[in-house]
Image (cartoon, helix red, strand yellow):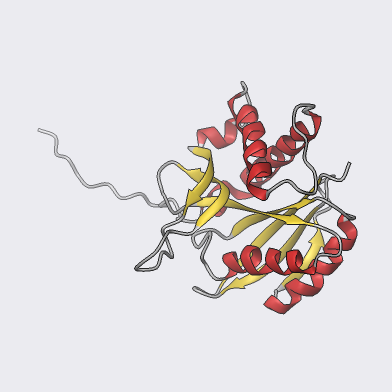
Length: 222
């Protein structure tokens, strides 16, 4: 008779989704982000102005990403790794004993782990509105560096919806504000993307791990 033995994988899948996907997987997610943005711009039925709310933009953007996701031969690598897009995801990792779970705007998550995801936190940005610059850092960057969002991931993203002004000017304001978070490296342009995308590196407070944040800036001033 044969016997059943406990088999332990020699290389267990890490909790860190970003590390499991690697540069190829992260790049594919980011390309889907950009494709969804350009599809949003090309849709004549969607009008975004400087008065449009963040959640409304994110909902429309998620709709475009979902269409891209469902198309034949799209994101095959991610689907084969059991990754799926989720809108308004509740992250229970750093939930307080009382109160609501923190909710990230959007993420790609692993089907097999509720805590493993690549997050996208979205913020409206305007020219001459320093309060929005501070909010981008306080409730965007710091939500990642504190571990409130993406505490299991070494890479995450923040999406800046630019509703007035120039991206280059807004980035300069963000560089000065993010410097107060003691970054390992401040915003620098990711030149392998043709669209305005930047990278910053930080030390996550809860576990002293280095994390990378991809900053994508969607221009809605056209």
